[in-house]
Length: 334
Image 1: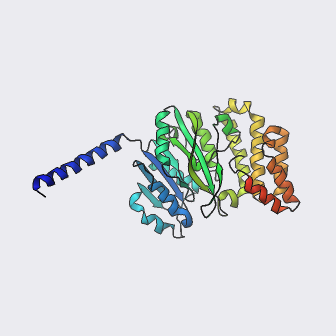
Image 2: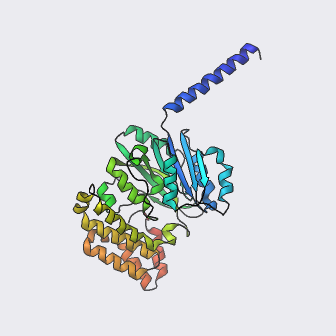
Image 3: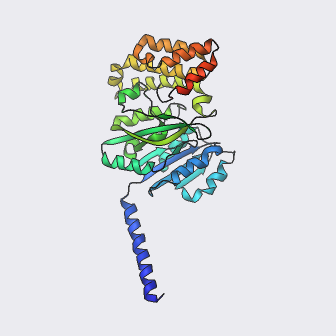
């Protein structure tokens, strides 16, 4: 190849590099945070699901809580792909995610737990939604429910919700939620007092600063396994539901909305408590909580008749029938 030809190749490569740099400058940056602690079994799939996205402007931040199960070896394998990572003792998941928020510089932010994963092309789709809806501060898609082996056993299809719905514990799948950093900056981040419904309280905070939008696309997968918080410490969820209501009632910006839906909201908190008490193996307490929900707002309780039926079956010792019901139950609707 002549020197002139070599020069043309080099010049072309420089132009392409400059072009890519200019394009990246104008692209929306997305910050993804993964809080990690002793979940080496699933961590690599989580990391790869972010790194393999077909969107280049991703700032990936990993905050590990001092894992000792081999997670650090996995993290170091990909360390040159992270914008930032650290492994140190923390005060729980909320603390880890807040550390990630402090490092995030993207226009759009989300967190992905170390046992969940994104589906292909998710980030690119999310960016398009935000760009087409400048007044929206939080978007959420649908979500797969998978077992510890990654086998899908349910697809959780959500609906368009309002701030009132959130106060009444209409739940959305955290791995399928993304929000603007401008709205994040108007909050105090995740509340360190919460360990189970920390995401739901945070959605309520964000939703005060703009519109929420549901997109009928499946964006992520949430893994349900024996060690997951929603199974291992199910009985603790109800306490946090009532704690959320107490914070809402103390918030002058939310008090008017809360007063409009108070019976429904409190009934919904009892329903949340009933569902998780049942999952925690406490059917008698679950049944009592369900009746409290029914007393306050019958429609709220009746939407989850399966809690009533499952509690009765478990109290009577008919666990196999209850297990058949559980297979059909959607974990997304509280």
